[in-house]
Length: 373
Image (cartoon, rainbow, N blue to C red):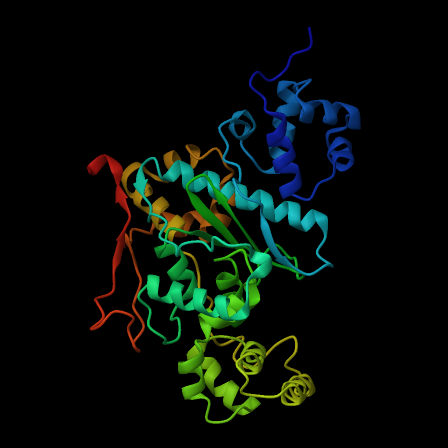
């Protein structure tokens, strides 16, 4: 009788292989077995021998326990990508797998740590195909009202998402044509940001808050019409360059927003984009390298809270995901993780015109150990 690996889950092999962008044929060659055998592993009609199982785990960078875990979250909505047509299928699959692992990590952590509960504006109930631009503007302002933000610039888009219960990860997947993706997993949304351009990522993060007419929503949410207009002394590249440091959105988005609001004509919009290209700002704008990247914190802080109580090795071993992937999802190295003890996420309310008279103090979102409550 051929020895196997009891409890082996074929879908987990598919996950790990796609996350590493390894084809079935390539994996078969690395394992020195036939493609048909790998197919059988993935379909669940056969399990690898202990020796082959060890090789698979080593090659794909996951502990053996990863391949034995069947209780894995899956999206309950379609996965929405922000990407260009040139994005490769393998890149999309890789991003989806990391999104799934982020959901898995959050689910495991939530059994011991109180993560922020989702608090999102009500979803639009109508038919999105008939959604007008005016309604999108209203939805964007309703979102700001829901979060008591007023009409000032968003100080930290990623912090806003995390404080609202959205698990957010930033990954460098070496995929220039893929910007981000989002989906709901069980009781919370998971957003993956791929790009490293700070001002562009803010619009991608805002993009992922909704599933309908996302570009217009992101512009209306990040650049409210009245306050944006009040600060535009002129509609020129030099003015937008100055405003970029405060509003933390791209010059390209400000040009588009000014046109959407009727502040500039079609011809002015075209001329501004042409001038922007002539200055070499199409791929990289001024301040892109100076504005700080908005880094997710919640997963790292939740892990840090448990590490302080149980020790790093015990916490990492309990996750059933490889250490390198846990570090990647949390945005910190294991060494950095061992030293993280900060227990809260703070969401400052922007200074501006508050949606509620008088405004309120910035809320504190605690990450508490469930066993102590």
